[in-house]
Structure formats: structure tokens, C-alpha cells
Image 1: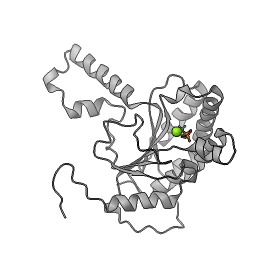
Image 2: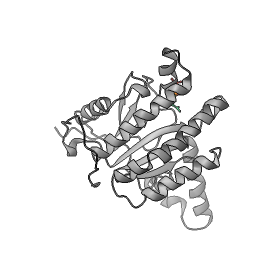
Image 3: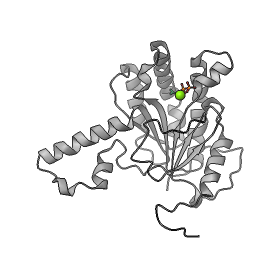
Length: 252
Ligand code: IPE
Ligand code: MG
């Protein structure tokens, strides 16, 4: 059980700890649409989206969730204009610097999943520094998916397993579901229990395909910059009301 975080809240929360998801994953979408609807440049949407990240991370720690995973940049997002990508990298770097002290105070452990190539050295440096400094914490785990794609992750895992077979460390018959899990970027992490997606789209977009096998899905029409603590609470409330059977029969 993570250590209590130091933040206090203004909003009471009515779902008891044992009914809360252990791991919440979020597809943060709709920054561009939020901005365009207001006649603002897309990057304004990203800038505002950082506030939602900050609030969601702090609330996850306050609720003692074991893990929060945020889809920050997909391996497909490189198709965007260079100016937008540069701004996203800048925001990421700033977030790593500005939130460091809060992350440390709130006992949050940061990890990053995704491929490092394409990310500027300065951004990588700040990411690595936050990961390093937070490693001594033992509270809520914040996993940031950056240049992440689930199919690429499965390819990397397959290569690693094939290499182990080639090296004689593993036989094909020994490969089971745990072997796959243990070779994904998410090794040692629990699977998400709840997957939240903002901006209304009903798709998974190459996010944690293996890991979300039994996650409960929760989609809101609200764009990511509009996502509030009250929305996180509602998602968790709805999750607590669902009957998870994992292919078995209802316990109720
Ligand atoms: C999500 O918002 C943020 C990132 C993918 C970095 P989008 O930028 O995808 O916003 P829309 O989908 O264009 O509205
Ligand atoms: Mg989008």
C-alpha cells in the first residue's frame, strides 16, 4: 500500500479504498480540439493539458492509487508538424523540472515507458533526473508513456525472448503469459484496472494492448484540458460499481 501523500483535498471522495482501482491508465486526447474550438493554436491546448496532468497526478497520489499511467506521446505522433512536436518536447521538459519538487514531496515514483530515440537530449536528461530522484519514494507510481506504441513494445519483447531462446536460456515450451509480461516495458507493473479516454473517441490507439485485457473502459466527451478531479472521481465511482468477472461468473 503506498504511503499517504502530503497533499490535502478540497473535495471529499466517497469510494472506499478497497473499491478503488489499483492502476488507472489515461489516454489524454482532445488538446487540439479544445484549442481549435476556442480559435486558439493547438499548442495552447497542450499547454492547458499540462494543468490536467498536474491535477490528475496529485489526486492519484492523494487517493493512494498504486499506479497512474499517462499516454503522453505515441510513436505515431511523430507525423505531426515539427513546431508542435518541439512544443510538446518543451512542455515535457518543463513539466519534469517544475513538478520535481511536488513529485518528491508527494512520495511519487516516476517511470517512463517507450522508445528513447527521437526525444531531444535535454528532454531525456530532465526525464532521467526526475526518475532518478523519485526512485527512493514508495508511494503512487506515475508511469509516463512517451514515444510509446504497444505493437512496438510487443516487437521489442518478442526480440528479447527470441534472444533468450537463441542463447539457450529459455526453451519455446517454457514461454507463457508471464514470459511475455516480464519482457514488456511494463514488467513489474500491475495491469491497468481502469482505462480512461477523453474527447469521446472509442478506440485504444495502440496503447497497452496486452496489459488492458481486463481493464474497465471509461470514455468522456470532455477534452483533456477540461478534465477535472471531479471527472477522475466519477470514473472511479463508475468503476467501483462495475461487476468484474474476468471471464468467470458474478460473485454478487
Ligand atoms: C492529445 O491531444 C495530446 C497528444 C497526443 C500529445 P491531441 O493533440 O491528440 O488533440 P486532438 O485529438 O487533435 O484534439
Ligand atoms: Mg488526438
